[in-house]
Amino acid sequence: MFKCEKRQKVGNEFFVKSIGDGAAEKRRTTFFRVGISLGIVSAHFGGTRILDQKPHTLDMGKDYYKILGLTSGANEDEIKKAYRKMALKYHPDKNKDANAEDKFKEIAEAYDVLSDPKKRAVYDQYGEEGLKTGGGSSGNTGSSFHYTFHGDPHATFASFFGGANPFDIFFGSGRSRMSNGFDHEDMDIDEDEDDVFGGFSRFGFGGVNGFHKRHQDQLHSRRKVQDPPVVHELKVSLEEIYHGCNKRMKITRRRLNPDGRTVRTEDKILNVVIKKGWKEGTKITFPKEGDATSENIPADIVFLLKDKPHGLFKRDGSNIVYSAKITLKEALCGCTINIPTIDGRVIPLPCSDVIKPGAVKRLRGEGLPFPKVPNQRGDLIVEFQVRFPDRIPQPTRELLKQHLPGS
Image (cartoon, rainbow, N blue to C red; front, side):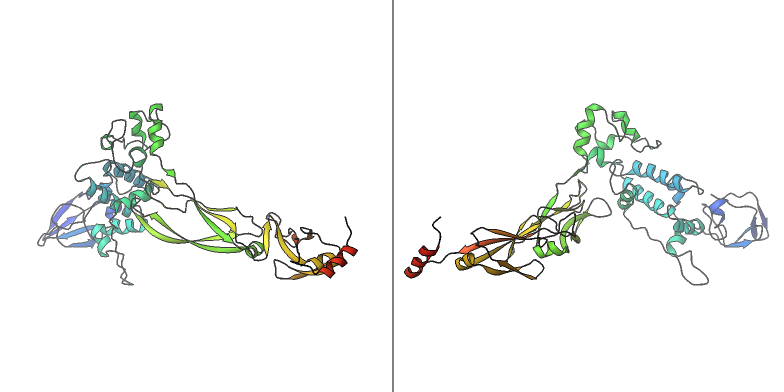
């Protein structure tokens, strides 16, 4: 607000001795936020002259300080406190006045400007019109600052309260009547309290962190609950378990928009790191990466490791099992078996003793890495299967009878 301490007419000119103070004084040579008719304004050392020409009115536009109930010298904390108070008072979820939505939007715009030091500085010097039409032009560079409000007061509100509507805690998103008989538009918040929810204590709630015993069930039933985990099987080969690997998994999910109410569908790539030796059944969890709505806490996305069937090996913890098929002759007379390994090598395994069906030999350290000690490995277990002939010629049978022991 401008004050005129002394005005004296000299010829066709009015000489104003002192005008304004504070932030308003910074823009006295350009605009006046007063509802009087003004002529052409020019700067003069020691005062300001108003030339006595055909009068017209200069409109400074919206008074953002007045909208929030502030003075031009308000600090950052005072601006935040004022916005919180006014936004809660005029939020359409609480205030059913026909003009509440417009007022709510006006409050958001005022906060958007005054909470930003750059916007506020331009506004303090040039007013709303200068802010929105490039009043901050630089004479040297020709550049200018143009501001346009994004137009969504609910996005500002959601951002201020950390992405959530505080009214939902008490009333739910449907803006419906609570079971205790109160309409949420009838419940009044005391905006003068530091605790923005302090006013609810008059209904027996005791603030946002405590309720009267008879209201606890209603509160808990309306709090957001996290959705159950979404589990996806992730099949991996034994070679991938042996070496370790990364898997890029694409998921499609719903996520909240900045307004805190509407949702969008999006794809996201999750990088699943599979470490050496991890066992089947291992779970890799991505917290809260599931669908998000105004009603829920997003579910965790869980990938459950499953071993792919392998052409040569079966897995037994950190050991791998290879089935070696040999003939009856090899089982009785001895042989050397070439055993493949998980890393692509071949190990010759000499067998000089008689090999019985189901016999087992171990190749130490040729299995999978231990999950907790990946530089150490399990064993490669060789299980022998003896292939018997379908028929034996009679002369051969007679020879076998003569040479094979009877017991």
